[in-house]
Image 1 (tube, helix red, strand yellow):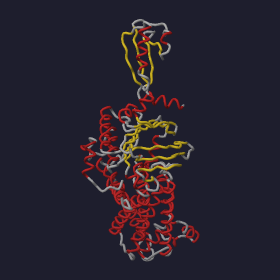
Image 2 (image 1 turned 45 degrees about the vertical axis):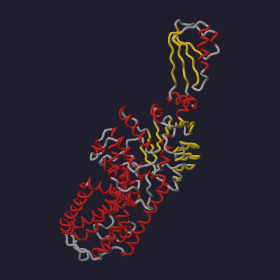
Image 3 (image 1 turned 90 degrees about the horizontal axis):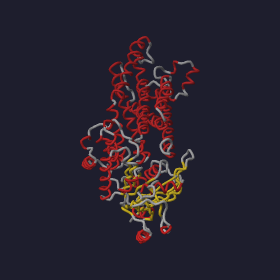
Image 4 (image 1 turned 180 degrees about the vertical axis):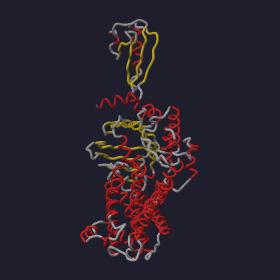
Length: 308
Length: 256
């Protein structure tokens, strides 16, 4: 897939001396949904800020659809829409005016039909004449998305788009993001809700302490780093794992009534059959079994804690 | 996209002008009322006891100074608030991430602030014309000084708006520096009325040149030559432009 954003050797040190980003190399593919995950202060917003032109880079280059963001800022910025983390709006303006203002700011002629479509898609049409200050928090969040979409960007940055948003609205936003992807828009989102990344993203990037520590296809990441557990509920409690089963990675839980077998997602499936055979041979009987799979959140926590 | 982002200039200009319409009382009516009060107090009440200044009644004499006083303070406050408010609310992110050049940002914000000041100046002029006998000997020069002063002080206001990191700082320079300089810059008197020492001191006050040039365009009376007034106005404009260029080159108080 073609690269639409290319970040090369990007570093950022603030005037205070804080090193926010260090030697970031990252390619975003055209049309994908890329989730950038990281703990607070990891550098997510700084990275987005630099790509969008809000923060000056200290070192490195960024190209957006082949355009250098410094030398050819007009071309690169006109392709990008940004939904910031904070609910920053012009309180005294009407919804229609503030969205139309954004379109003009990004160099596009007035197009009432497009603004109408965006407002309708975001369920803001009936509020078009209302002042921004009268909107609820969820509506303001949608308004920021409307502003970002007003100039028909090909790349959309969503910085914590569903922070403080109720479940229904979150699902509506996920639908909107999917429809934008279908329309060919590349989406980069940062989120604290790992389930959001798990639900939405094609690829995941993990940033910690200003460094990208991993970029991977979501399914591949889950396959590589995910773990599965097989829990056997025993008919009779054991005091310890029998010697005959010592070849398997087993541990006792539930006061000896559960045997837990941990295996890699990509592990040898035949090992489960061998375990079951060894259990039968050693006379250990079970009345039920279940499997569980680690979530992206588990993987994320492991990755970030490994860096500490 | 065009070489100049005309749509962005129009959007910002329109946005700023609509802010004026929303705040009509504060933007236009309040300065007009306060200036009219100056006319009543200094022109009619006190001015009646002050002799003519070079064949111009005192009420008429102070008109250019009063217009200049409003022009300076309103240019500063319009432009400084215009750029400071997006910084305060955080909406500046949109401006910084838009495909807009620094020139276009300055042109639209300063253009809107200067437009408002010029409109205000003309309204005060019209108000004054109903209260005192006015004459404008050099209308083209009057418009030139009106425009140059509005643009220059809107640029200074823009600089203050970027520099300020709180409302107190936003008010500090207009209140503590510009207003005293305007009052002491010959708005209400000719510096010829001062003792020689204070005449010399007054020449270090930049507002003297603005008021003098503007008053000359009305009555042909000037404290300093009109050429010097024009040159000094252009120098202030050039200094302001240089500072704005530096701000955008370095991202001072705008970008980290």
